[in-house]
Length: 343
Image (tube, rainbow, N blue to C red; front, side, top):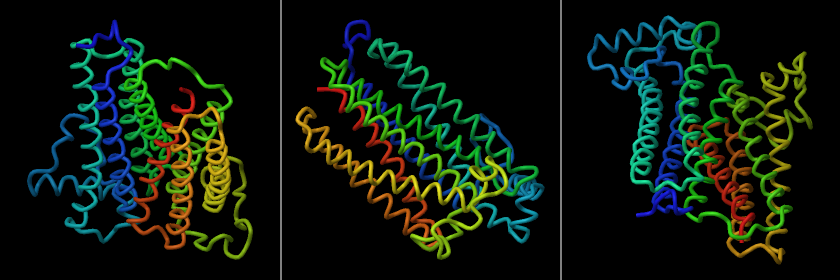
């Protein structure tokens, strides 16, 4: 048995963390589906324990539907919705919350098991505790986001959606990095810092693009300016400026789409340059070179997928695929940044 007091690695812990990361990916997919189907406000109460059970009788369904009919989204967006239609959006949101509960259990249970068996590398013990707290914070932020659409808005606040999605992607990246640390142990030799800094900068830019994409989603900005590469025939949207910095950066449909496109172009150039540099490098090991090439290919694919999603006005399948590929791209960027720092 490996003791966290004697060993700096545990492949069992690594496999568990990667499994939790897969659950986070599932959360991203179901969360994206919930948003794209307009289901995110269907459950108007936050009940962390009792809310695990869905309505079990017709009376329960009618009570849930009555609570939904009391919010602005029903009155202003879905005034003709029937109970059967409500059930459809309810199941999406319920499934998203159920996955969140399963994610917490999938983390806490094995964590306690590995801790009791003293199989967690000591250097990772407190980091894993931080990951658990980050997951709990994600649940709280999720309700904070939903609450923004229950009284005065018909959808959730875009900036709260950005924070909610940003925390999910931060959790995903931290899980991947920690799993790699658990699998390989301490680095016996560290490569020059220039490559590590370059890879971390690319990873940070990809994360920034995720946040900008969340603002596009929160503002439904994929439904405007559906030509490419221009904006209704212009190089930039005519309504970019919304009268104030925050209103423009966070709430103007033209601005958030323009910013998302611009960073996408920069990312493509940066990813290709990084991959070319990695391939020519004499100090990077072959696995790091392959990761760099794979990351560049995935960034290119994601850019093309984003263009198709925009020009087709965000069909459900492409919208989900675009969000999933964003998560996979960040995960690969994390693996590349981790790998180039080690021999």
